[in-house]
Length: 63
Image (cartoon, rainbow, N blue to C red; front, top):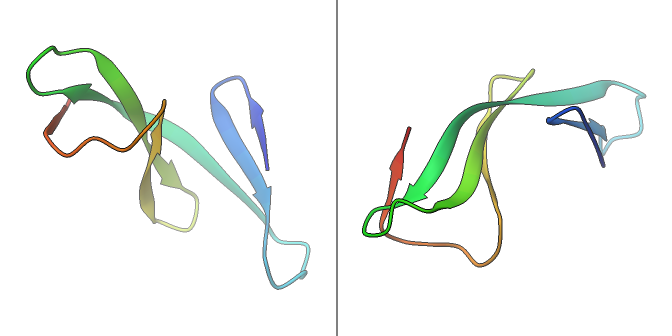
């Protein structure tokens, strides 16, 4: 997996050579402090996932 200009690129697990790419779509903020704790990414497969800066946080808001 690599990161290029804020995007994440990964080779598919089944070794077909299909390239998956993700783009950041929202920031993930701690609900109390409003500090950025991660980013929400949308993969070109349609899946959405959070990339955390550190440990996973439970009380978050998306902006």
